[in-house]
Length: 269
Image 1 (tube, rainbow, N blue to C red):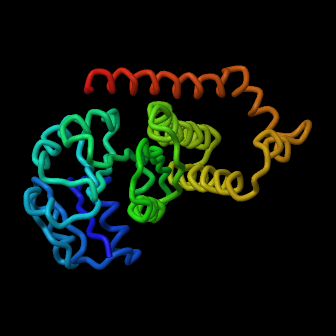
Image 2 (cartoon, rainbow, N blue to C red; image 1 turned 180 degrees about the vertical axis):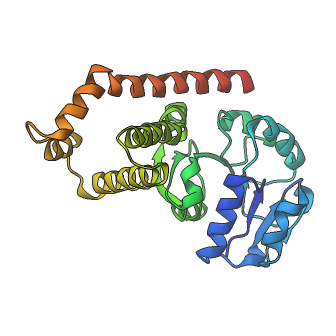
């Protein structure tokens, strides 16, 4: 039974600990947590999770998940410097923090992986991308790390150099979708529906469309054609979106966010 340490109990870190508990991946006493704002730890301590400072946690854990903001990662790493060994594995979910940056502080003998989750892990429907190990890592521990993140959504394994693009697409992507939903709601209101009804229709429409795309494995253009019958209503709506280069605008948003992710990575590292 692995012992998992989680540093930081914000939205992401808290969601991971809750998922580990709710899915019974390991027993509560094998979850070690630390959070500067002690009140955030109380709900987890009530469920049997152990609160330990880094110096005590380091001697007990098998897997360490660093779930703090990028600006606070260096401070966390410094608190573990010289206290970890090569049998343990460190996971960072901080955007822009490279494995090489982490290794410079912890030492090259400590296995390090990056995971880029998005905010949808809060609903158990996240997209989590895990970096491909660049060295030999305990397969059992890596498999368990994947199990943790699969408990909050779907996972994909990619080379670390792809994670900036992942940040621009799935990391920032929920915000683009919310903006589209905002447009659907506004359109519903303009057409005479109430705010509440428009929101409900728009939210379920996006959820259903995404689920159908995921489960049917059909091509996107095929799904569009199945709705946009000649002379029908959808064709007229699509004309407006295509005239406004809707697809290209979304693509440009992904690229702009990716470029910013690369810039942040360079600034941090």
